Image (cartoon, rainbow, N blue to C red; front, top):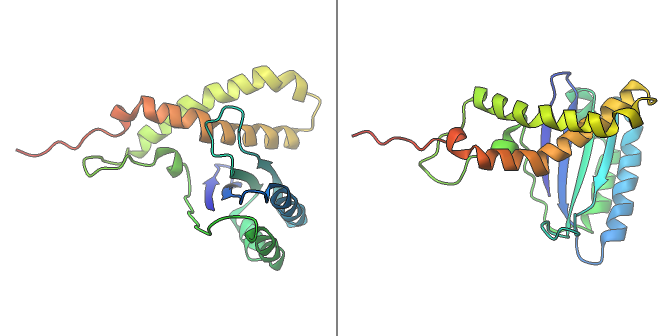
Length: 196
């Protein structure tokens, strides 16, 4: 299991959790995960969540990997959920259906810009991370507005924002950011020059 925490400028916190589900346990896992999400809804500051099933159509993703995206309005409210008995019971129910218990918290956008393996690489400066993030988010939001703007226009503002931000996080994390960081890798991670 891996967990990624994304802080947003508004103070809201989005959490991405990846779990490897045991073969034959998919239905039971989805039920337990749904029960855990239902329990989280009762907690102060909960903004929403979604279970993302593996993309088995394209064959590019491991069919046992499930992703959960959820958000709280503040880190304090997220902590309240994380320290609750309800979450502990939910995790205990899920544990029998997943493999491994590795926890990998990453704050901010760091998981999008994990440095390539090797001693000759420097991490990118923050301004480069900001430039690449904007290059990815701006067209992603624009396309989502073109595709969904008219459909979502009658919705109240908060549900619209919740849906669009969840879609942006998903698209950036699994599609746009990996492509951009690969394309711009020479600029993001210039090789260290050896001193002569």
